[in-house]
Length: 236
Image (cartoon, helix red, strand yellow):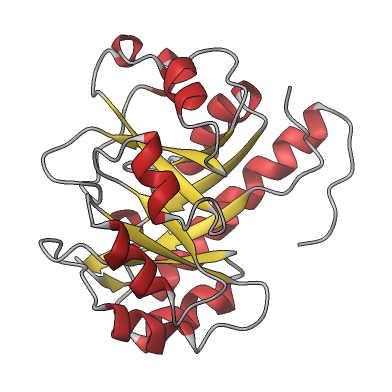
């Protein structure tokens, strides 16, 4: 199912500081995430997110994370960030995602909250089908609150084949992301990864060295997959 010639895309989420945005760009990540959910310790206002996003060079994508926000608030927050992708991380229905993404004119991700322990109790195939208009389904551990809990769900319990682009999240670190990619990538059309707490000093404060280590571990997984499938990966 998977195209192994595709480089694993990387998103670093929960950024709050200029130096962290710069560190993510320097490490070679593909996307940066801004949390627009006020209860989160990583929360930034839409205005602050737009200010930080101005530091991004071309081809590094800002992602705006919302939790059960009004469609009007999502659309307003996106107004100053025409290149942003929206991430829905709450209980948003397919219809609500469609409305808040300006009826599909704004690409969006839909987070699937995978139970800890026995992940077999969650029907990911049906979830992906219900949210077929999403650009990808983001897999996160189901913890108290919404995301950023540093918990890893059981990757081996995921379905063997999901007809969707997936983003692996939930408790990823430089130490485990290689294994996560090797386990999950064969199950999807493509796989990206998303990390927040795994590259932090404290909530919302990133560590540049951990970011570089995380990116290096992702590239290690790519190299292993390319070798095992006898393909040549394009230069990053």
